[in-house]
Length: 113
Length: 109
Image (cartoon, rainbow over all chains, first blue to last red; front, top):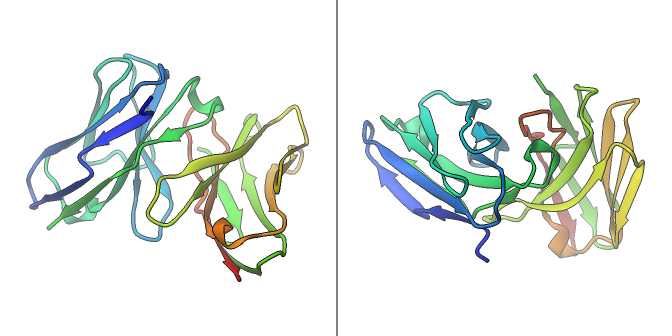
């Protein structure tokens, strides 16, 4: 039982490059989330998926797109990376939406030069 | 949208003392109130949560109290230990899970 798995763990991009961050959970959770955490800062919600087939914007969605591929997988895409997107990205899942605990992955550390 | 505040933003205590962190929220419809702990370089993890039908919940050295009328809830850590040093986040979710800005707790041996 791995919980929430994020890939890759580390990534360096040049400005303008694109990439997709992958997230998968094996707990049969309905809801999934993407957060970013800048150094010394809190967790800011980028996008979330309350259930399979739905996605909604969070606090800071600009510059990102998401896909809820199936119940297990929720990917985050940066179409044209910018230095302001340098951050640690956390994926999380919860069994029953916002009223149940979030389980976080170990994060992806992204640097955009 | 939901506004979640935490106080204090930083807290330093001597080992063995108690620590209290307060979280205030704006949406009176919230009914689930979790606290997460994030150690340096690690992922956030739930340490305790409370639902609106109870006023207090304890788990060993950790407790959470809720005042729905005043729209705040607090994390209480007793007999603090160096391993309690971390950043603590609260949330008062309403469709979106928005976190407070965090409180950095340092426990001095």
